[in-house]
Structures are given as structure tokens and as C-alpha cells.
Image 1 (cartoon, rainbow, N blue to C red):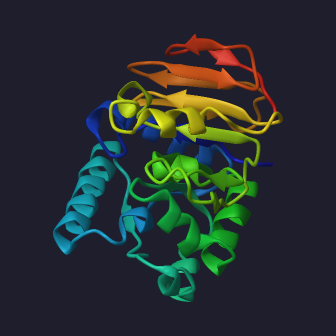
Image 2: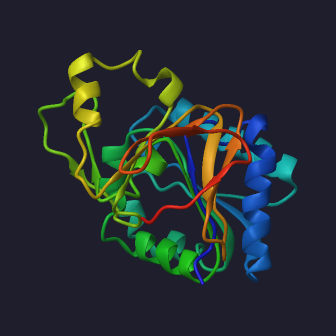
Length: 240
């Protein structure tokens, strides 16, 4: 039985998301996983050591708030994702969390590695898997280049191949040119394009057939399904 799967627009480890992240841990524990909060910062692997320390500290504060141990795996590149010392810590963990940064770097670092295989296996056995911002984008089959729209898309991790996520949606189109915005909306006919606002998530709980919105703002369905906006607590069914 697959565990819970959460796609988050932004806000990993922030107080506003604490109850949601706690619920994902609880979902994994219900499926007989151990109450561990695995934090994988690979998407930020090219950032400065100060920034990486910041993410680790932020995650520690959140884990303490939730009341479970933090397991921060310093997986900053592809070599780290092949390190069995890190891979072996994935097994039986209640929540695996891919935090934000560069989605292309994240996908290229994890694709076809023992770490990613372990994450998928653990999720299929009942752990929760969460992706925030870049971490949500990489779960599709392809990742478009927002600022370099002429570049070919990067191959994603293909867990939910037909879903494309635009994170930070309520801020996103202030950051990128109009040409890139048009490109983002041009997805294959069998794809579902979702914009997820900041501090907002959509989750498919373990054993459930519907997705539910959580958070302060909205989830926007833009292509591949009737255009609509959903708020906290509202549910929807779609295939991925």
C-alpha cells in the first residue's frame, strides 16, 4: 500500500506547516513506520554552507516542534545519493521530505540512484513522501526550465508522470517572463497542470482515493481537468 503523498507550494519546516507535517508523520506511523522525519536537502546542494546550515537548523526546530527526531541527510550531490550509509537510513521512516531549491539539480542528482530507489520502496510500503517546491516539481516525468524556456525539459523522477506542478503560484508569475509563463501552460494533453500557492499543499492520504488541500491559500487546476481553485479542506479526484 502506498503511503501518503504531499505536493507543497512552499513553506517546508515553517510553523504554518507544522501540523500538516506532523500529520504526514502520523500517516506513516499508522502504516507501521518508525517516527522519523527524514530531511533531504539535495535541491539546495549548490547553495552556500551557511544556507545549508540554515536549512538544517530550520528542520531541527520543526522536528522538535512536532516532537520527533530530526534525521538530516547531507545528500548534496549524486555521489551522496549513492552512499549506502544514507540510503540505509530511509527504510521504515515515517516521512521522507524533499525540500526546495533547484529542481533540475535535484532530479539529476537523484534519478536512477540507490537513494531514490529506497525512497520509492519505502513510500510503497507505507511511508509518507513530501515534496516542497522543487521537491514537488521533480516527481513528474519532466521539469520545464522557467527562466531558460528554450532549453529542453529535464527528465523528472516519474513518480506521478502526468502531474506538473508550478510552486509558489501566487508569486510565481512576478518572477518569470511572459514567454516562460506561456511555455509553462503548454503541457501535453494527458497532463494535469497544478499551481500550488505558498504555504499550501495538496495531499493524497494513504488508502484514500481523493486529494485534499491544506493551507493558507489555494491550489489552482489549470490544464487537464476542469479549471478550478480549491481551498483548505476541499477534495478532488484525478488520476496521475
